[in-house]
Image (cartoon, rainbow, N blue to C red):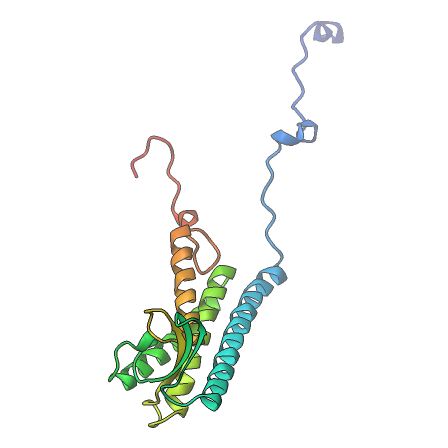
Length: 213
């Protein structure tokens, strides 16, 4: 066939060049985070947990030492009327003077809590979880120090409580820290925040429209 006859035939359209597509039409693959950044994240969360725990432990020990040195057992010093006061009590039970007479059991439970937090700390990616676990860890360690070092003996030591607010049982800094940490953990659960920093629904499998779940 001559070149003239071929010239009359319609030309087939050229294949589109992917580089000519608008930016919105191009598929963008998510860029993975650098490995060094992924490694630094759990370290930062662990440092936050340890900083909170050490701070709570230091404040708890310091306040107990000061109160024991300045007050006698059973002494009460009003601060705001009779509603808020310093009231030195030796507590053989759990937080807020609960479960008295089970001192050694409570000591074992507190040790289990500390060990559990240390194991969970390896998975930490969430700052909220780091804060909460740091508060619980610091409070548990603060009361454990009393269990081991105060009378009547190791594992049976009585915890120093000294804060009295209205009808509420007498408590200390460690008790407050444990309660606040527990409240933060409940908040994390309500918000669906996992210890690894993800949300609960992020882990749920996605289903195509019209398929059974």
